[in-house]
Length: 474
Image 1: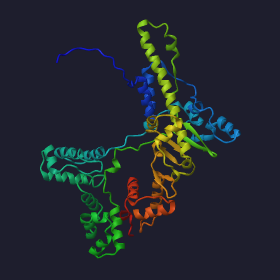
Image 2: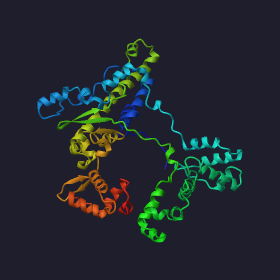
Image 3: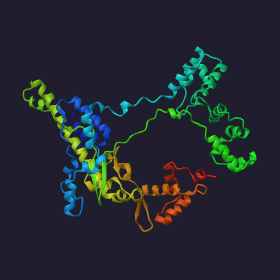
Image 4: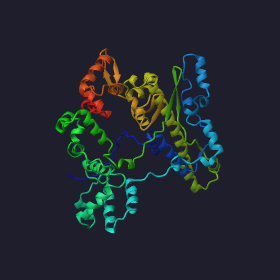
């Protein structure tokens, strides 16, 4: 069979994502802090972008001019023309008092983080104590290896043989250095097991004179963890009240001495949207605090015609990029407002009464309500938070599965979780509710059809231990 060249026409369709479309999609899924950082970066790189000093116009009033906030025309006019800065007061994202303070005292413009000292690490805290002690050069080398093998809880993760491979020293010297480090602050650090950590603390605080207390720590920690109190009381021939006294002494010790120096920092959430209740209606305000209000740079716009021919293409590209970014930002804010408005409409009972009234909701319902694609709703609800009168929630929180009720209706899974958490919080600690009993109570109160394994799954998702581990004997 011979080879030959042929020409043929083929008609096909394909989706080509332009850089502008990719940028718009990327902006949708950015959190508010990431969005501010992206806009600031664009301000530095694009000369056609400039930050406007005028007050930003809230997109929510532009997005829906026929918005109805109340049934009567009088209340509608009141809501439309209300001065929300004065009404919200200190709960506003940018209060007038804060603006006055920034104007009068520019030297106070430093961020909160810039006023804080760095938190000492466990390794640094121990190193400071070691260099104040009388360690030899060889001991200091051993200390350096030990500090480098501590985990976040303060436990030593290397054996003596492994330490010997990193530093040439006899086992006796390494063990002696470990014992000296264990008696530094925090006491018990560099231990290898929880029993060793607690025993070091008991010796340091002179609590190791009672043989029962020593035996409980060295041999029966697992029994204490699993609440096997009665067999322990029979073994040591003591009453449950006396055993409780020993437990109180053990609980004064710290089994994880390194956690106070953990490098993990709390995660602060800045809400993207505020939802305020006004009578029987709700007002939605986008949080634009810190987000620059963009405009085209007039200097470069005026000099565009006079620019050399070789620079015009670059200028036109940057001008189109700036215009598209401004359009994408407005579209992002408008989409966010419409999605939150739809969520408030679907979850009205939640915003009125709290988590127990949360209804089942899926992305498709919101997408159909606002005439957008599900993927757009999914992106705009990623890493976005809304502040309500019941707390701050991620937008994904409002989308939850449904459980069938006896009358044919449905209830949201998050509402059931909230009820399970409430029942466990109000239970008798000496007679905790089993998963099966919780399912029976939900059946009686809500007429919800829920299996025991489903209750166990919801309980585990909320990090609530089983009834056997919640039971208190004293």
